[in-house]
Length: 331
Image (cartoon, rainbow, N blue to C red; front, side, top):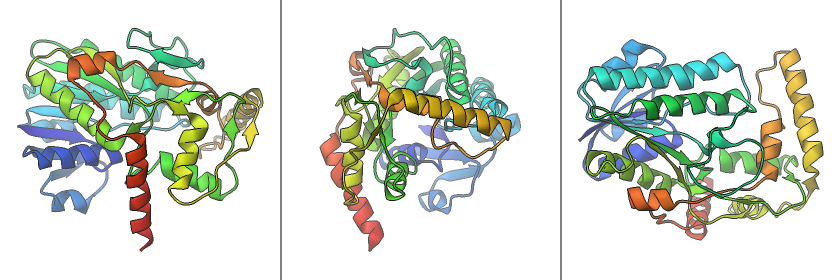
């Protein structure tokens, strides 16, 4: 197979590329930046903008399957930027698939599309999209996911995966942010409850994408559907955060802030940042306050049944690997 991976320079996109190459697939990638490491791997790496139809059109030519991983993530920013990067880009990917007779599209979504601010405990894919959203990321990812799933057909089989809190060696977001805030003395647990959360080790997230792509080409059980993906090991938010801190030998965080106060602070920050048009992400937003103080764990029955998905790397093993990667960086 010749696979196109969008966002090949990112954490998940790069990991998917390495896994595809390892099993013998030919890989082309498209991303905004220049990544010499992709060229060294033998990837046909194209620097381009998915918001430009011509760029994705050229990248998709001759490919058999697309893994659309690229997105604009974050909890703050102008709606139009998120709309362009997440909705317009996804529409361009779908159009390119149709133009070049590409039959399979695996889309990386997020559980945030269904998050309404309340705890999610063992929910499955029957949970509806949120009626209102806290930020542009949620809203545009939900719209993009619906575009992908509504495009499913005999000619173009599509699937959307919703991995939650991906982490591991090479992570540029979750672990580094937790560690940075702890080092700065700005990390707090939100709420007085031990809310449980799912997370997803990078190798497991990659496996889910490859399994989904393979199923589209064979049984097609997953076509037109969305799936929650995680390690299937819900643990308390405090436990997850402190396990990450332990990988760099930092003391556990015990200080807490009231969830209602955190939400109020987030609302104030959002108001001030909007008023003065500050682009930098606030230290707290309403979305972050709710995410940190509520539970988020999922029923993976559908992924296990349709994709034969089984998390291979446990949280314990993943943390060992994460610590080893940080130890190597110090040398």
